[in-house]
Length: 114
Length: 117
Image 1 (spheres, rainbow over the protein chains, first blue to last red):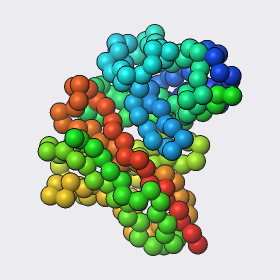
Image 2 (image 1 turned 180 degrees about the vertical axis):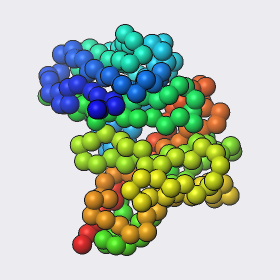
Image 3 (image 1 turned 90 degrees about the vertical axis):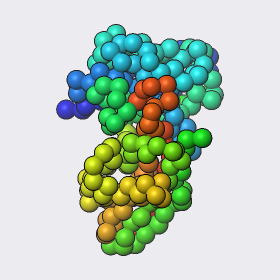
Image 4 (image 1 turned 90 degrees about the horizontal axis):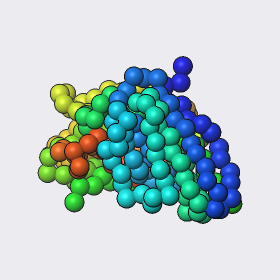
């Protein structure tokens, strides 16, 4: 059983398009995250939700809109894709907001903008 | 400013040799510390963590790390490298108190470990 699953695994699209990435966790966690990993492997948090409520928004362009329909799901919609959006996007989850809680990661979605 | 630094973007060892991957943090209060491993085209897997208690922490796959407050370090070691250990390793920190009050991992830049026969 995959604990944190993301779809799709690969996404190739053209500049200007709109795309979505879905994430689901079956760990019973309350808190979910989106991270961006750039071409140099640097990882940076984008958003965090706790029980469907947005709690972290790290100055991400408003073309990126996360949505959490329930605490097991966190989706990421991206409008008007730009070349700089090419990256690997990781979803993660943790048990609660406490910062001693480890985060569990999905396998990532590799987004390539042509 | 609070930060986390991994010294050495690439480390190469022989199979059977000691693995030492370095991680230092900058903070006046000891943070919570984590090591993650990323195999090619995969997500991040938690290797080990230090939150409280014993400063020598054992993780999966034979890895361990020691929290040294005086050196603000949390270096990752493995006594004997295996070919399957080749991967990218990330040190990650949750500062105390957390900026903004929430669980927000700050990652180091990563260290690519190569293991050769």
